[in-house]
Amino acid sequence: MRDNTTILLVVSWALTGFALGANAALVHPAPNEVARMVVGPEGSPFGRFIEGAATDISGNFYTANYGGDQSKNSLAMVTPNGTAHLIYRDRDPNTWLNSVRSIRPPPGYKPHHLRLLTGDVKGHRVLQLDYTTRTADNLVPHSPVVSVRCADPGMLQPNDIAVTSDGHVYLSGMNYTQDSTLGDGDLWWCSPEGKARRLDVMYRTNGIEVSPENRYLYLSEANNRNGSVVTNRIWRYHIDSFTGVKLRNQRPIRSLFVDFEKLDQTQAYDVDGIRCDSQGNLFVTRNGLGQVAVFDLKGVLKFRIHLPAIQGVTNLEFSGRDGRVLHIVGSCQDKANATKGCIARWTHDSTGLEWELLH
Ligand SMILES: *[C@@H]1O[C@H](CO)[C@@H](O)[C@H](O)[C@H]1NC(C)=O
Ligand SMILES: *[C@@H]1O[C@H](CO)[C@@H](O)[C@H](O)[C@H]1NC(C)=O
Ligand SMILES: *[C@@H]1O[C@H](CO)[C@@H](O)[C@H](O)[C@H]1NC(C)=O
Ligand SMILES: *[C@@H]1O[C@H](CO)[C@@H](O)[C@H](O)[C@H]1NC(C)=O
Image (spheres, rainbow, N blue to C red):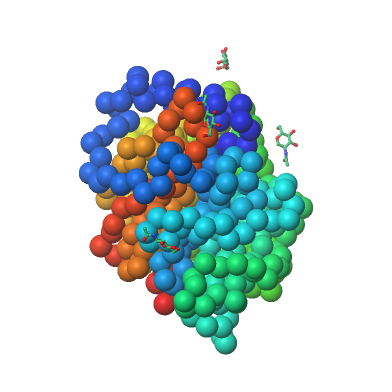
């Protein structure tokens, strides 16, 4: 998610258009990969708040905001052939689902059963959806058993969530203000038992991901000054199953992984969703820039994936029958009427981490 108000969205769209025109040579080096559109603006069932990204074991893809802008309380499944099906609508119309992850169902469940975790921005909670009625013949999930995985009124949102293979959930969140202050962003940890604890207090936080073997936690942080975004960085923590992340003097230890000002002067464009492939490379959406930046384990930029028709890229996940098809979501390019959500695909030579953990 980029902003939390419509006005800010419209203003930042206008600014984005201007900045891209004025600084095209500076901020837009030649893309070396290009994604292809699979759900375009024409007839898209998704609204511009399309967000969150997950896969299942069969390669179906999951994302939010099915049914247009007003349906922020919904999740849908997109099959490998591109057909979208509504799979969840929360009873409370105020629920705002902005993140989704797929985790292995517990022992005793069948392989085609499905367990999704989804973050509710307004409810300050993470829901768990268990689909145990799904059969191998009909993979469209319906009628989930819904439970609250964790919640705390002190959470700023959650904006996005990440999960270790042993059930530790991490949450980012932000309060989008003209001038960021410490506390406009947070990092929360929910233990496998559902206990929620705030781990860090920062400028506004957004993209969040766990690396292979549950070693690192990546978290993006951005800072606003006088209404402009002036920094975008990715931090790296060491995961610790007793304290959430490793601490020194009761404070989380983190190191700078990428600073977009130093990298390519694109610090004015938010990092949004982040995902790892099974090798630990990091796929980072750049909201407003129409790009995914790909980093290796050392934080070295490998290449970029350009999205010809999705400027406001919000999230991404590997899916598809072989787990190598990166699905990238965001609001459609059409600025005259940016009311639709779009989905693009790009095929990798490795599988995604989530897909790998489900197998
Ligand atoms: C796509 O998959 C769905 C199953 O979800 C199926 O109903 C539909 O017929 C398929 N469409 C095409 C064009 O293959
Ligand atoms: C968000 O920021 C505004 C402006 O600084 C402040 O009034 C409000 O209390 C903040 N909200 C939260 C939940 O911290
Ligand atoms: C803040 O932004 C406003 C409007 O863009 C501008 O008029 C003002 O000079 C800026 N203030 C500072 C301290 O940069
Ligand atoms: C934008 O698209 C929506 C949904 O398709 C439509 O209802 C609306 O009339 C369109 N607005 C304009 C200005 O074209």
